[in-house]
Amino acid sequence: MDTEVISYNLDATPGYEFFRVLDRSRDALRRDTGFQLKTASTIVEAQAAYAYSPTDGRIAQISNPQISNQTFSYAYSSNSNLLATVTGPIHTVINEWEPTRDVLDTKTNKLAITVISKYDYAVNAIGQRTGVATSGTAYPAAPPTQRHRLPSGPKLALELRRPRPSHQRRKQRRHQRPRLPLRRHRQPHRSSRRRHHRHWYPQLHGEPTQPIHIIPIPRISPIV
Image (cartoon, rainbow, N blue to C red):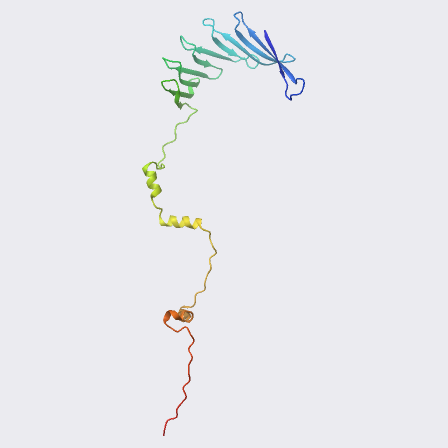
């Protein structure tokens, strides 16, 4: 056993609030076979166990005996240390690598025979990832192409230069300017409209604007 005691000071005052003990285990070849995280009273809070392949010495399984003891199995690509598959209690992860270099080509997550998600990577000549294509039940099919598309390029410039119809311009101006209360004026009757107009605006009809003074003429008696 390789034991390490971890002390925690949360408030920066002298003394420690609690402790944890980390026990690491090793096999005869001095390889890590797991760990246990315990409280000060040696109660196990977390645990993991490692198992190695007897043929190539690489990690073959990782389990958690403290919680569920479920096992994750690891398999590698032939003649390499590249991880090929990870098989868990529920699903499987599959990695596919390029044949001439250590570059991940695709990653697939499967539930039995159903592909939940798949990632197909595009990588350039110097190993940099430039794109990814997704598929599987986690990625539904793309929606159908819409009939009305936004204009672009020369069509967009033409749409911006095209004047709007007059009713749209009037509607836009009506929303932009403040609305004032309408003032209704009483119109005179048709029969008196001309007289009313001539009374207030006599200069428009060639009539004098000054009042007219009438000089009385004396009456002359006829000669008999």
